[in-house]
Image (cartoon, rainbow, N blue to C red; front, side, top):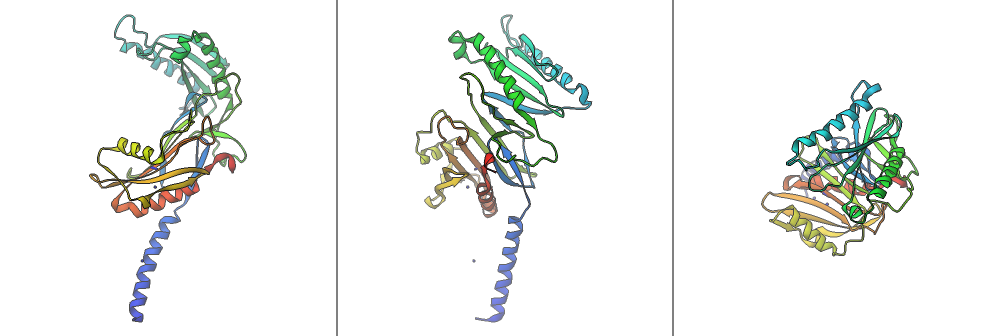
Length: 337
């Protein structure tokens, strides 16, 4: 992710300098578009493509899917396709007692708009999942939640079953698709933004506040630039120091990484979050990774654990650093606009 005596000579030097500055300015003034994800937004160059993101809200994993025409029966057709995918899990059964692909229940939660299925997805965890498909018009929203083995051990599987259904119904009702002429973010709204829609964060009944999570990447069309953002509600703040967090992140990226000099490791506030920034160099590959991290505040959706990263090479370091600074400086809470 993620972080220049003779008048003629003077004139030529000025021309060279102006030409260089002009090229830099051309890169800096590239048009941008507002992109929102989770509870944040920033300005992204229009030349970069937003890839399919991963989202979780209130402990539910959610995916948007575009309906194929004809739209009048697209929801039912897509539902039948998903049920067929679940049933195909049976072909992976290793024994007669293997429960994969077992459908325990189907239920209509909102007639014509929201349908749910309770099924067993995995042989290693026989706990069933609730999954549902929302009909929002031009697209659907697939919502899924796993039955925690902790709930099963506590003898609360029946309570989980009904609380999960309530949670799915409430989140589905809170989803709003984006229209082509609608400007986002919507001012003053504390919404959780997906790729093509948003969830108006509801105040839900019961003790299940759940998790919020995002993992979104923006990449150049040639695939050489990738900017990744991840956020997650922290159960508790990371107790490790910022330097140790960066060292661990460097180890995850590879065994032959070199931490840049101290001038490239600093505190940096992004979107009001006091985090830390680091430039990591891969000596073997000649690559550079910009990273920014915030440890998060316990149980806070507006101040979650966050990590931003951007890859670069030695040859593109100056250009990538300008992009990195531009995007971090533009990041802000979506509800604050």
